Image (cartoon, one colour):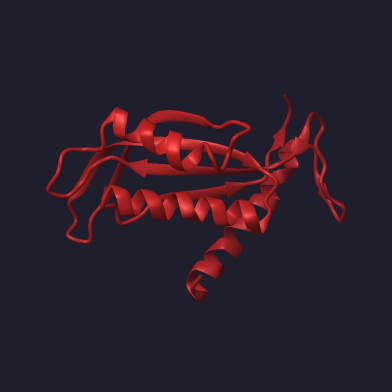
Length: 142
């Protein structure tokens, strides 16, 4: 992780910690939930456009989930469709279909490594520059 990435992650962590009061408050003992328990949530955003190729198909994405994601998160996950957009350095605004995967986990180094493996595998398999990762600490009840 680069120094810039570390600072961004620290900043995001601090912002999320300040926003944790919506779950019932935050004190020296950690997140206090009125309902449920704190768990880590990671949202991964997978763009489906490919340079010089057709977009990633539903079947290709499902095969990726079945072979790369599910073996690492066997207890469950959520996948949904989204429409993303971003601006290139040239100023051109790009729109693309996106898949979002939501993962709940214990926040351990092993889980984080699994998530990084998923991101790197998607980039490699589907010729992507990046996969957006957002981590948060919500209160979760089943």
